[in-house]
Amino acid sequence: MSTTSTPNPAETSRFLERLAAIVGPGRLLTDPADLAPWLTDWRGRYTGRALGLARPGNSAEVQALVRACVAAGVPMVPQGGNTGLCGGATPDSSGKALIIQLGRLDRIRQLDAGNHTLVAEAGCTLANIQEAAAAAGRLFPLSLASEGSCQLGGNLSTNAGGVQVLRYGTTRDLVLGVEAVLPNGELWDGLKALRKNNTGYDLRHLLIGAEGTLGIITAAVLKLFPMPRSRVTCWLGVASPAAAVALLERTLEVFDARLTAFELVCPRSLGLVRQFMPGAVAVPEAPWHVLCEFSGAGGDEALQARVEEFLALGMEAGSPLAALLAQSESQRQGLWALRENISEAQKREGPSIKHDIALPITAIATFLDRVAPRLEQVFPGIRHVVFGHLGDGNLHFNLSMAGRDANGALLQRQAEANRLVHDLVHELGGSISAEHGLGQLKREEIRRYKSPVELAAMAAIKGALDPLGLMNPGKVL
Image 1 (cartoon, one colour):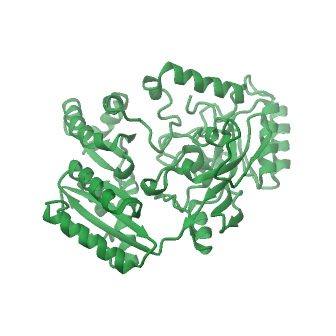
Image 2: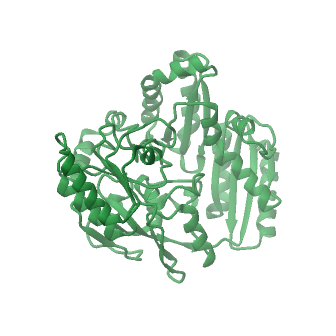
Image 3: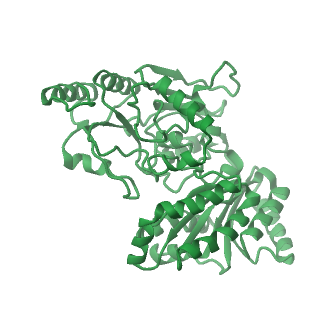
């Protein structure tokens, strides 16, 4: 069977029977009603079609599925929790691809507390990995708003960031080894729990961030850390993004690695959470907001006293304008809910143009100062929802209009808005994708900002590993 031409119904039936034999009864979905939930991305922006959806239960079954697809010339779309924001796990409209849904690969294979490592399969949710590490007195620091539903395979495929990159790095920094099925159907076991392994090309880093275009990751060795004994969370009011950047610099000078998160939130972001997410914690009013968290090996009282002393000195200097320190775990969770619910609140308000950008931290205030008047000149009345991980230079910069008709008109001009935002990001030495990947959304846009040399190298790697172009086609390249 080949999908390059119209498939023969008998061939298609035999192919599907082969897939069903691999994954077992009830684990191959072909009915349109059963497939529907897996064909649309989280934002509702992309909807595709698929030949079917297979739910393998282990790496051997993933390998058998890939080999069957390669033999039949059938494209493959790996999918995890389907929480991505760029359409990277959504099939195209041809209906020729097989979705390989990895949620059944959900085992913690090994936890070595002494080596500070954990081996997890690609279908484990991020929350389950965090819980397994905590049960052993260890921390897995990757933390996202979608951690209850996003899966490790997706985190690896997009090199997810989250709120603690400032201290622990991105997903790429937290992975020592991976296991993956390559496009030729071979299973590569790279699950070495080593922090030093200098033996040639690092296939692990090639697969991380590739969005399933170079192979399907089935498991990974993850770094663990000592569980912090103390944690202090505070919500701060600041005068401007420039003030927030200055505060970040002073905070790092005093606390260094004890500062684990430093998030920037604009008033409109906070207002959306208050409007659409009942029960939001009250925080001081301010022109801009910062949510920061400190952690350490000492006691809570000593760390909190140190943070209070530092903030008092800062207020005497005029920044921050106000501070609220969490006095309980429930209040701490409430402060984080203000930040983590922004995307959901904005989704409830309606569609928007989303930008996931990275900038040098010192360029963030300049970007926000310059981009606002440029957008207003072209799109009068445009609204900005700005939030993100200031500590590592990652902003989520989202655009919408107040009225439904006006917002619809804005969405029709998304390419124009993207060009204005992304050109300024590029001018300031930034990136148009910080932690969400390229997927379908930015596949063409990235060609404007990557050099021909880099694009050619990426195409050469793709062609060498996936010469048939069957691995998640239409994504990244």
